[in-house]
Image (cartoon, rainbow, N blue to C red):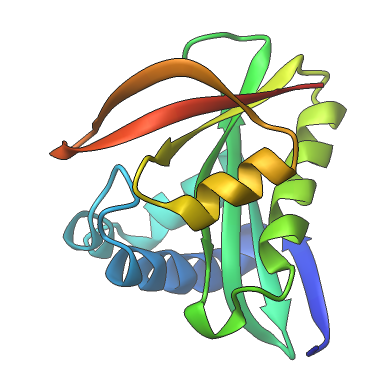
Length: 161
């Protein structure tokens, strides 16, 4: 496997974060609650704000940024944190990068003193569902249409810490 590291993005990483996020939206438009067109329009100040106010983690393989995951405060419960934006470059899937990214967000969640880490996952994504189940996340029974894509259903999963 290539030399892989996961780093927390800072101000100087905003161009890398933008690039990998736009690749994620282009590759998997039905998996995210945003669109490529929307985020392409964000200016540099928005990307700076995004990487400095939330916990963005970048996976790098041989110096190239090939994945990301982000931790944010849970929008429904201040005692929890929420995993969003999880994505790994297709050529690097199946090599453990997703595990490393989720582990980084889990470690951040613990450092934050949060009680749980939650996420929403599209029901029609068995690979992602399998990853989260293997890492100990459990379905909460909550389901909803993916924001912006009412025909796509997603389910909430949670890991108690």
